[in-house]
Length: 132
Image 1 (cartoon, one colour):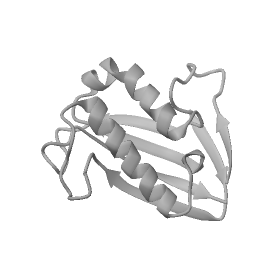
Image 2 (cartoon, helix red, strand yellow; image 1 turned 180 degrees about the horizontal axis):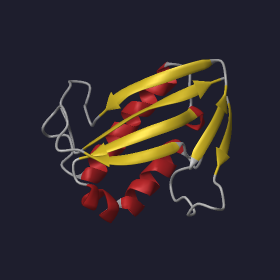
Image 3 (cartoon, helix red, strand yellow; image 1 turned 90 degrees about the horizontal axis):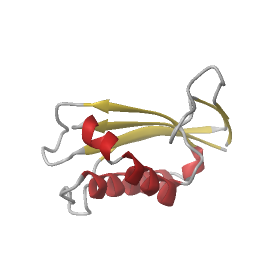
């Protein structure tokens, strides 16, 4: 994929996301929402940080299995049950993102939800990627 990250100077400087991503490739991969499920299908981790790390790991595992890499992500949506907590831990979550996915940020949004499918889940990530 070739990806052009577009961050117009007329908008506030992005931190941990891109305002727009222009992607050119031959395959689009739609990634289902991933939470902190372990291989037994149980949510693990008692903190937002721990759950975010596993949810992102799961998202990237699905992406890699489809033949993609973190830089191929064009869009990711984060669903959090507590946006205030997400903002409080944003620096740590950003470090986790950079360690696992690098600095080629997709277009992103964080949305607060009342709850997720699994009541123990604090965060879920979904998205799509464009592969070469």
